[in-house]
Length: 226
Ligand code: 5RP
Image (cartoon, rainbow, N blue to C red):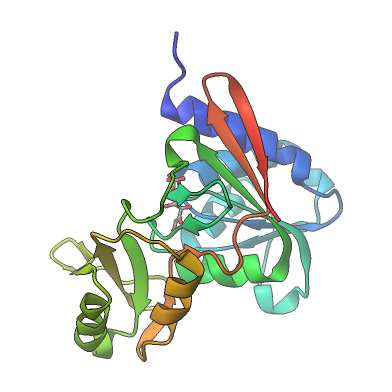
């Protein structure tokens, strides 16, 4: 019987344990695949120093397992950051932020030596952009940022929750940019970051994944980049 998407996520989450360095800090991402990784990490929690979390939700799940969560400001480096993706290319460029945690994800990833992406096979794409690109913005500037994003060719949509704009862990808003066909992810990442009022965007291309563990019907495929 074919494996479900959740089973594929669980399989890559378990496979990512091979990249955890014993006695060290592990950077932990956000989302359903990252949640499976947290559950797997709990099986070896006594063999790591602790973790840094990319969201409040991830920190809560780690703590519920009795796994230590450190403040990133107290950590200078970590060997590995493990996280999911909404889309990933064969070159390791990603769209992230479906769970609105993109800024903290990018900050924690920037401290890690290696980004291990864990994803079910449906996330591998030829070109990024079918998944709406999340962009975190300062609330007082969301309308002007949306106009500038529209000028880049996409359709901006303010992300809502319970009838009000969704607020991130940083107290900011998310604009999802639809209808993009992203030819040059690294250039677009920079162009969007240059708009005043943008905190960060969900393109992880200038610094993408180093490894991707992809869940497929034939088992876990390992893609290496760089
Ligand atoms: C959260 C993210 C997630 O990694 C991304 O949305 C993938 O989520 P999932 O593992 O649930 O498919 O970037 O901000």
